[in-house]
Image 1: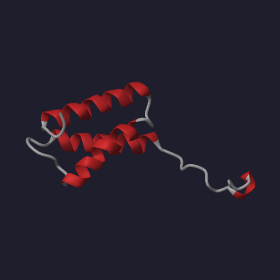
Image 2 (image 1 turned 180 degrees about the vertical axis):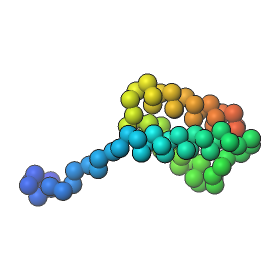
Image 3 (image 1 turned 180 degrees about the horizontal axis):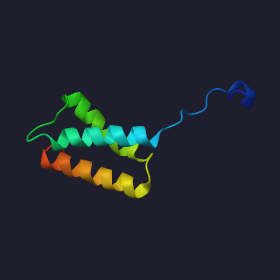
Image 4 (image 1 turned 90 degrees about the horizontal axis):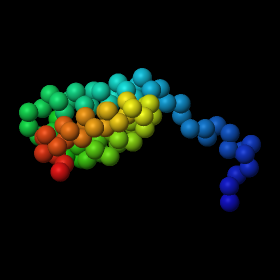
Length: 83
């Protein structure tokens, strides 16, 4: 069912740079904060960001991830994008 280990080499998960993750999440959060109404993204992109943001935060230290997730959620609620 699965290839032997030596045949699966090169399939290692990509290395994740926490600084890149932090930068992407901060940009998304800043985009929401800059809005007075609605979303800075299309409806499709908004839905995607609502799913991806919390998952990406998992690559950061727990306290930082929780802080970013809570801030993101608060902005979504403020803009009436989620309930």
